[in-house]
Image (tube, rainbow, N blue to C red; front, side, top):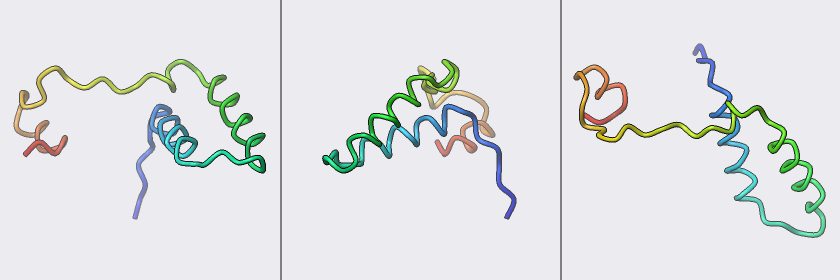
Length: 70
């Protein structure tokens, strides 16, 4: 199964999600600090969140199908 390249913001969002899901303990506090520092140094385009359209139900049928609105 071929994979599709993902934008940098996808990887950044996944990293944030994993950090939030990890419980901070004395044993992993240093690793979480390093992870936060690395994410803070990420390019701005990676940190940008994907904008939701103001009105998701609009657009041509193909776009609505690709987004999963139909």
